[in-house]
Length: 345
Image: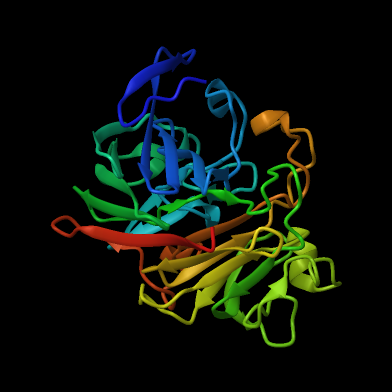
């Protein structure tokens, strides 16, 4: 794969005759490579070691179903029944086989070609303009995602405007593995989540609108705990998802100065802290991986070989008025920030 340092260049052609562009930014021991297909983080190197899953071949991003490193939208998570009502007007969103609008429908923002609008030594910005009515969502939406590297962190800033009242809930879907071997499971890594409750599912993995306190359950990571210690306990919520795949209400609220999660690898003595302005975060432990997907360096991606920190609003918030609103009106500017900060590398 050809990666162009701090520049934009055509590296592959898809069957749709759209070009995939790739660029790399650096700051000290931090390095990030991204592609415009889905505004994806293709690699994030910390002290020379890649810590995110993905593919070596850029073509694989367009041919294999996954969200590695992608900006997902318009709405990450599910909107139940694809039903959306704004100011008394009903909208039917695109739905999948589960009957819900998942991750904004297909194609999601993760499967769209973004424009790389600027690249500097340590920053990169991409833009996608979603047409009015795309996948059923009202309003033309212009979304900018800006990646910024400091000497020890990756910052992701989102900014968006719309021409009609709409809903928006974007997030980055990077799969993290700090072990130094992307084909290895992360069950021994230590997880801390600054969240005291989770959004509960019914048996069809549809949020009920209720929150469940994590105290005394396998979801309690208020004390740092190995990911694999309780992941297979006979808990009703774990049985629905076959592992962790739940949205936490964060105790940090929208205060980005307070960490909302941390991941620690004992062997490498590497820690990643997560900060966000979002009120919630989906924790997903790659339960669906089964070794059939071949990733970087020819590694089979086995079950639970990564963990995702999807900072967001709750799933189905448009139909759950007691949860934080995801509405965006014309004349307003949506802004959201998430930071992944590393130490001891």
